[in-house]
Amino acid sequence: HLTTAAQGHTEHTGHTGHTATARSVTSLTADRDRTADVALTLVARAQRFRLPTGRSVDGYTLNGTSPGPAIHATVGQLVEVRLVNESVPGGITLHWHGVDVPNAEDGVAGVTQDAVGTGRSHTYRFVAGQAGTFWYHSHQVSHEQVRRGLLGALVVAPARRPPTGTVDVVALLHLYDGARTVNGREGDVRVAARPGDKVRVRVINTENGETPAWVGGAPFRLVAVDGTEVNEPAPVRDATVMVTAGGRADIEVTMPADGSPVRVHIGGPGGVVLGSRSYDAPPAPRPAKKLDLLSYGAPEPVGFDAERADRRFTYEIGRRPGFLDGMPGVWWTVNGHMFPDVPMFMVAEHDVVRMRVSNHSGESHPMHLHGHHAVVLSRNGVRATGSPWWMDSLEVGNGESYDIAFVADNPGIWMDHCHNLPHAAEGLVAHLMYE
Ligand code: C2O
Ligand code: CU
Image 1 (cartoon, rainbow, N blue to C red):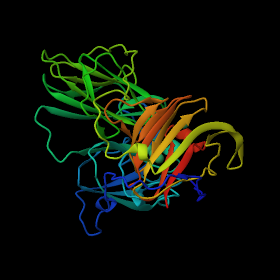
Image 2: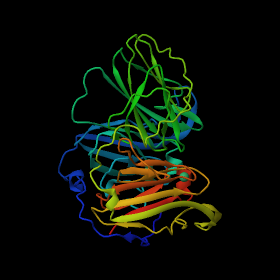
Image 3: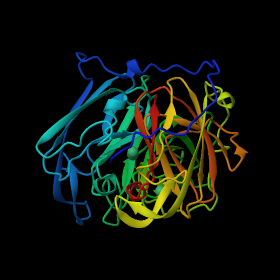
Image 4: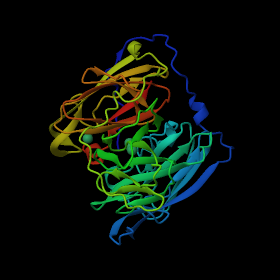
């Protein structure tokens, strides 16, 4: 990706002397001489590989598999990943989707680093600052490289150990050549769980579209969204969780006392089947009602005052004919501008930033902000009343408008783009930049 350094037209409303929750970026940046707690090498290769069903995929692997190895860390640990590009043409990177890493570790080719060419390597180092469900993927020609398999799960566990009777499952959804897979396999993923166990299924949507998830055989709670715990999540029956493209939803189920199995549907009839004696959980119909994050859970303070924002921006998504890289077409626009001529959103460290994201483009867009988590204040003028809805990936439907807010606490240049990755390639990209 190329980027312009064009200055944005920003409305500066003056510092308000708020006391935003301070997060020290230096605490996320590791000392050079600190040894890594989690260290691994990921070797990227262009190859033909087989899904467990036997279907052969012409794609990209990390250490011979796709998805690549799931990375597990604990809060406070230093993660060090050496990325080696053995044979992927055009260069590669790794972006830590949803992790608020220091800017130099963000993995955006052309912005925070050069793409890693074949025969070369690059080492990423960051301290896992927040527990939660995340993922990693290439951010070079992302629409192609992610689709072809340069991705994997990243789970950061809280420092405190989970109680016994807790089962933790990653469920990474990905489409290979039209085959919908969970953790690289078509069909069900089976996980052993005893009656009374609490099972946390970490749904990661790496597809380009919003994906429904629902549960058959037990009520569930949506315990985390995009890596942040929901405050007081109530048990849900008969509702579907919509997982934004790029987004994560942690679904918690308590296994029924009678030993019957539970099916967590992810995107369709398949998904994760939890059981003790049998895994014979019949598919459950998808509930028509959608769980609305605007009103789910109980409110609690977010740590800053969004009403007294230092900066207010609009991010209006549209579409019009024009030229992108000299190519005529009908392209996405941000505030009427076409990439790369989209003015940057300029902020200063510690600013409270408010943004109104609205969409009149005729299609839905999963918007992803790098390096920050934002809280949703309202949708179409209706204020949020539930648990603070912290997100890094937000589905903005056609005709919708969201007010979001965040604290600018992570200096650098950060992308704010559509995670329907072909849309990003078609110009639905803007940047946030610190003065
Ligand atoms: Cu997961 Cu800029 O992307
Ligand atoms: Cu889009």
